[in-house]
Length: 269
Image: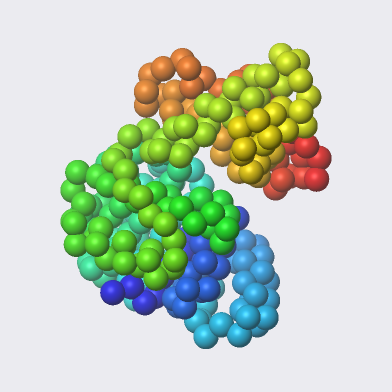
């Protein structure tokens, strides 16, 4: 039974997942090696805890050993396979064998990541959407060695969090990003070749397709660097040129225009 949750990496997504867990009443341990990240997360989360009078507790730490008593550890590090794999090797040395380890990767193969672990049967993918406080979907990604008892426990944990979970097999991009990112990429191509301006492209999808957010606005919200990373993984894993990132997306990322987090992407903030 999950009672204490560890969050590894407290950037935008890690902090949001931690917030969602605290709202559901789970005690949380947030780990990050960057003190600035920890300070930012503490400022945001402590304020919300005080305002809502939550009873759940949160601990902030730069020591990986502080995750040792967690029942579930959710990795939210940068979307890089080597970074994640190296973390999993370290975390297995600092937690109980019964601890469930999950990755919030949005596109990297769960089977490949599982191969980094000594006990892959307790590892799985948990892809939360951004922001999880509003978007209640979580993709549970299976892999070949997953223990079905772990799957059942995770499903119960997500039920307590009032999240809607779906199971999917380990295919590139899973479900959401395999469908979503090619659409975003095509919208960027439309913008690049002068089909229309950003606002009109977004309005077309919001009104014409009943999307709550336009594709360029959504790309800025996700982070253009994250969009680029996912598209590159899709292109590589499928070996299909249809996933090739739009050159304008690559140009924006190289220039540091990453969307909302840098105050500029397809829009200025």
